[in-house]
Image (cartoon, rainbow, N blue to C red):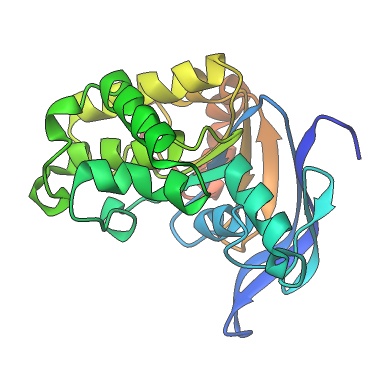
Length: 255
């Protein structure tokens, strides 16, 4: 394993309830500082792979290694190992309502640092910095349920960025957002990538790929990776995009 390898999956399989395949022999490597896009139709395994990369689920078979260490149910039961992993990897869910649950925005963003043992003064400083950075200081004392979809997404992202993770995982980050919020989030992910964060995101947003990714992994509806390449290479392969149900026959050329 190379020293700059962040994630390595080798012949990973996963089935829900041990009956419904979601990943079928997936092998991949994500290197430090890469921006990787996962492409494929709904149900192909993108979200399942992100959950696996975040240590929320574990392979039915095959191996998953993060930062040179095997990630299994047993290794993640070790408190020191689990904490070190959680500090380095952050996951922004597609549905912000599944992630945002505290009484106020300020408490939501402070929750992670406090759980990781930061003192309240340091946690408060980080929260203030993130509120200002994301332009949501005016939301600090609002209840998350009162916020718009775009505002909730910003709070969910803040709750992850406040812990300064090395790796960011995004599941359909621009889904269900208005155009202005989509552009804001695209710009933010681009900015985070330019700053050297490792980013893996599942997306259907083909138009934003050149801005958001260095490399694309394309899933079939049989839960396997069928192709990889740069955004330009993948977008130019119309037959590939048709075969994996990312475009339909009447779609105009993307490049």
